[in-house]
Length: 341
Image 1 (cartoon, rainbow, N blue to C red):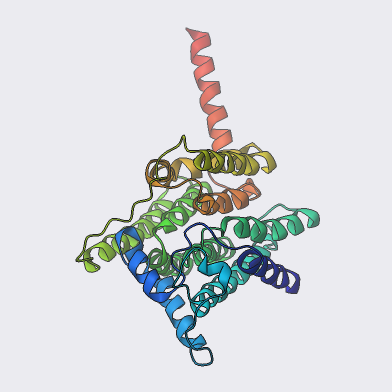
Image 2 (image 1 turned 180 degrees about the vertical axis):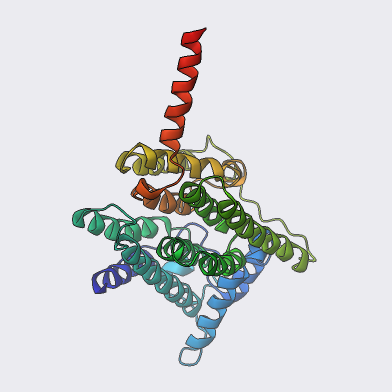
């Protein structure tokens, strides 16, 4: 555990102080942050925003507001060193928590089929990949990864022994995660795939999926009803949706490579079907990213990658519904009918 904490600290320090952010670097003061991210879709991501302000207020007890060092001033004249430190501290904390969740997940006895070497590789891989994606500095991405892995851990750890207590906990976390960022829908898709795999198309899986879906939708709709921007300002990036832009092509290559990796390391065909089912359930998110997102912001793919990574190594032996076996059964039935004809 200490190794992964140290790794998270090292990765975060390198990312925020070894490199100078030159993309989306116009939020490095509280005033600039509000003017940009209190509008459009960003205004509904309120949890991590208030956590960030709380960290900034805590730093203010010993550190007065002052100008930033020259490397930050290049991109934003009014940059604040303290506010940049608040972003660094918040994201470092959640990177540590996310990395701890990775350690807990890979050591879940009987759930993930991993050798000791594979456990260490995943423990080191996840914070490094997240670090690469953080050239787009934001306050809600890394916290979102933590909630996603926490939801997965609670499900795998307790769904068979304390089903409804587990689902109630996941419902509360879904609400909290949606207040943080709407990509929480991917957690709902991930758990839905696991529910139907574990229990088949039965009442247990249907009710569990319905509960999480209602929690997500109710929170999503409530935020858009309760939070109103009187200016109705749209934050638009000219790179959004332009799939022929060179940077977005690089982003697409990142997506392709990290789509491929979970399939390549999957334990068996059942796991590949699980990953495919998850991507299918995540199509609304994927299509929205392709249509309206800036694919150069490779952070958009990280929650898809994290879910697929762990689905690739889940042991399907106890599943009530195995997609691979079902497809083979259908193909045999179709083949026998064709032969009779």
